[in-house]
Image 1: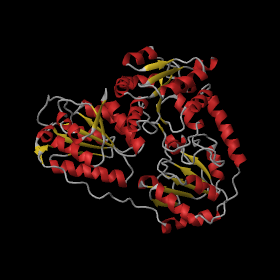
Image 2: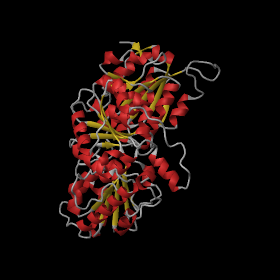
Image 3: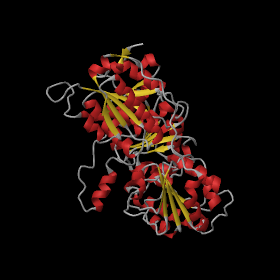
Image 4: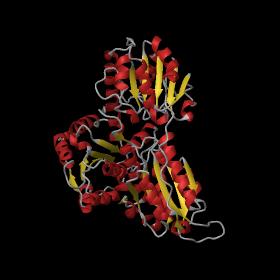
Amino acid sequence: MKRPLGAQISHMLKDRGVEVIFGIPGVHNQEMYRGIEEAGITHVLARHEQGAGFMADGYARATGKPGVAYVITGPGLCNVMTPMGQGYTDSVPMLVLSSCLSETQAQRGQLHQMKDQRAAAECVTDWSCQANDAQSAYGLIERAFEEFALKRPRPKHIQVPIAKLEAEADPAPFPNQDAVRVKALAPDIAPVLSLLNIARRPLFILGGGSRSNLWRQILSQLGAACFTTYAGRGLVGTGYTLDFGATLPRPGSAEVIGSADLVIAVGAELGEVDLWRDRLGHKATLVRVDLDPEVLADRHRAAVKLQADGESFAHSLWSATQDCKPATGWSPEEVAEARARWRAEVDAERPGIVPVADALRAAMPADTMIYSDMTQFAYVAKEVWDMARPYHWHHPTGFGTLGYALPAGIGGAVARRGKPTAVIAGDYGFHYTMQELGAAVELGLSLPMILWDNGKLKEIEDSMVGSQIAPNAVVARNPDFCKLAEAFGARSAAPNSLPEMQAAVRAAFDAPVPTLVHVTPDILKG
């Protein structure tokens, strides 16, 4: 039956598998809220649109399904642009729906008016489009979901004029049959097999797009060594003796890569934030497997390129290499020596964090999903903390925004009710979105929040000193974080030793509300 378009959109989203929407209602988007409860969708009220966007991001990373956010015109859309930018660089499927003004050129002085709201959103999304009628809105939503399934997943923004959201509209069409992504078949990987047949030191670089549970078997069968990007951590589990880990940013990794006689990068962008250097370091043939043609044509100039998803490539490769004899050019001792050397480098660069990370890892349940912020603790942990499972540590890698961890962790915890989820944040970044503690308490989430408090912007201070700049504006007055958490209704702990920290974290997973675990570098003195 006919309903206002805003309500029909909610029903359409429900029909396409959307179960949760994150957002904040306002007078300009209230019609979108008319249909949420009627459609049977849960709405999570954020305290800021930036929080809503990060929650949608965290939900998407935890489930693999698009995270959806509802925001208002003008400032609401501007506030969610930071999460959309983060989702764009980290390949996160997000759908942001907003209202918009019907006319912005001839009439000035309207509430929430922007010169060109759609164009602003387009700067940080895959695309941003305006739907001027019901059929256009339905078509754009359908397009977004098709592209989430077929292409490199990235945020989309759809805006609808307020008057159109209020107008009566026919229901959206029923969902189409699911689209099928182009997959790598046996003939497609023939050039890769030819190269593997003669390689003695094959090396794989597995990125976030390498989605498969076959990689450990494949690497073992081939006798291949591997690196992972930060997003690819856990793809080979722990204990594989030829795994160099997530150590691509180590300067010495270029030398190792240069010693390989075949390099195969799967679902890895190999951008600045993966390598922190201009060149990968390879001297042998480079094979790239990726969904994104832009990646295949990048500066690394791969000799063999295959546009395909990592999962189907892994499956075809596994099927075709069952009878291969493993290469013998790599040794576990070589890998272990490199990893030990790089671990020592990490510890020397940011002293005192490695033992805390080791202790925290030991306190986490094996299937914990972690959301981290831009903080020195995370920078260290991502290199030394091996993951047993893939896609269980999420970090704002590309855009590098502060304030990501808490709201994204809330989104992940909403998606993973009954499973352990944790947040790691720094003291300064926590200021950006700490108001979302209210949402976490409201939702009754058993969410440990490990707050690494070194009392300053320590990474920036170190960078300034390294550049011979007198440190300036790197210290901000912090609140009593424990009292702050308790004021929101959360629990808190301020451990004085590593065993106390471990006990506090373990207890937090069973608490009926979030727990802020306040950790300072002085914890090593306990």
